[in-house]
Image (tube, rainbow, N blue to C red; front, side, top):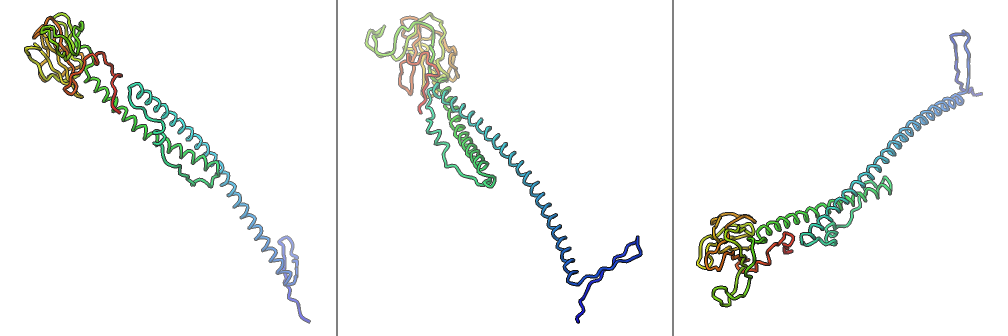
Length: 311
């Protein structure tokens, strides 16, 4: 008869001298040990699972808070970009108003929109955060791209506007546009019967009659190129202005400027007289553009807003 192998366990206690003996078969002992090991493994696995899940829950909570913060920041940035776009629109409206007021070519609305050009690009960087955040992020990118394009386009048109306004101001300052003196217009521009020769002749300017000594004014900014005395003109002054303009002042009693002097609009350059071939005290005033005589009446009391630049 085979002898079954058994495991013997002896348990003693410090409180009792008596020992307790336990005897189990090897199979049952192996099962008990295996069960204890399995139990310990289950406990360890459970503790590990709980620890890992707790970390995941903590991480998920932190991500949820971060996502909420990102959405709030995204909404705030979108609102700020909307504000910038609104201000750009105000600037564009202002530019259109200035262009209309100054008789300058306005920017066509379609041209402004064309300046925004290009198809929107989709950025999928944050698609993992969900459709709402992904869409909001790409909407913000579109607005930023629009603001950038608008700014670049508006800066270009504003620079052009400033240049044209500066040019317009310069043109106005050099355009004969005020009365050269006070007095009655005694003779007009064009064909007439000459008061001395009684023959039909072409009068190349305007005559202003008043007392000897009446101030004579430069009608635009310029440089004195000629002063002197001629048989017909008497004492005279010639001023060259930019943009092809030239003005002449004749029959003066006294000249207060000399060749090479720079003069400004409204500056007194002489006094009215009765020199040269003249029937009485008056100023003979001429306006030329690119060496062609123009009717001075067309320039009297001309305002800066009347100046039109070629587009």
